[in-house]
Length: 376
Image (cartoon, rainbow, N blue to C red; front, side, top):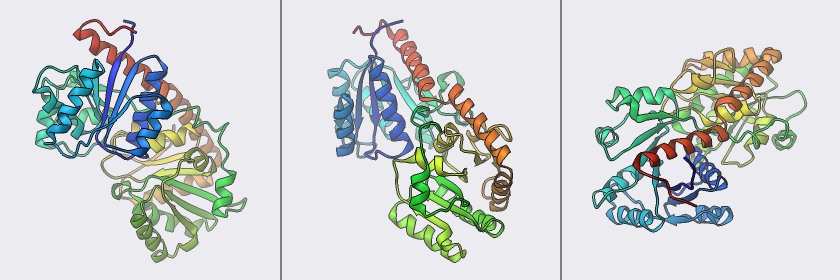
């Protein structure tokens, strides 16, 4: 079925640098380039408003303060009516809840709920997702789908569509890591290990503990942690000092030059032990042909295939992580082989282009089930 889709994307937050925010922007921009009419609703945000003006995509700030914010629910309903929306995609549980309230006033277009993390569903969330008012659920990994099915949500209601990586931006032939290595003060023989993403459940403490073992064997190694808020940055730097790592560890805040950071790195690690669906920075690392080591949890093994596109280790096991790091540092041929195989897999299954194609077809199916799509 051809024709223009009219889609409302609802993101009940104001942040603009998290993986979920980036995925939403890339989805909206991609759909707009394909000729569809996309409206984005977030909490009021100057950053989102500026992005929308530049992208030429309608953006509306809606407070979405809490689950009983009925004024915001009615505001979302007005948006749907004013823009003749045919599909609504909620990217967080709060957005879904507000849209369910909005649906009590009268029928709404099909509601799609995104599920990108593996934290346990509350009783209310499981009940809401099972309801007929939620048309479909998009899970970003097979492991998340399995968890939802275990909570009683019908498997046929859940579509696995992997989040995507822009393989033109994350291209080893385009990004140059020399400037990053200069910024870090690394000499030609230094080895750089990077973890992109700093949160309590990302296992950054485990990465530091593992690096202490790595550093004892490879004193030319340096660890870079990227994406820390100021208070977390101070805590990680203090831990590095306690471990005697000092200047061998650098902690940065949020950065936009992630392709260059990954180009500078000899390998990337993800030590997460909870919460994730499939770590986005693993996709980005492999798109850059940067070898990866990841914990064997949730969706990571769907991308990091052990000894094929990377190495997997148990979560919360710094010794195993250190052993895997030392193995790749000692075997650059294996590391290069894994990185190249990783980019090939990302191009085949985890690119932004493939995500767009799958979601576009998915939306069309939903609209088709309700009747003809809107014309140009």
